[in-house]
Image 1 (cartoon, rainbow, N blue to C red):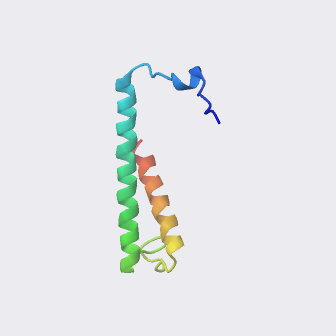
Image 2 (cartoon, one colour):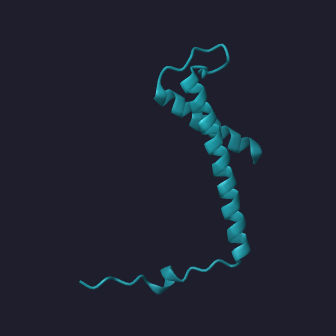
Length: 83
């Protein structure tokens, strides 16, 4: 069987300026690193048993799924504050 070639319009996508592309890539990479750090920190708290739901007075988190939800939520919040 012969392989299909991609159409010319799809394979020749060119960005106006490569510098813009690299700047966008750097921003995305930095924000992802910050998110990963926040998630790692929260999961570490969960493993130690110090992660609490809600405020400092709330009950300790028992479920791993709940800890993941909290981690993702906090990572999203940190992204919103920096914009």
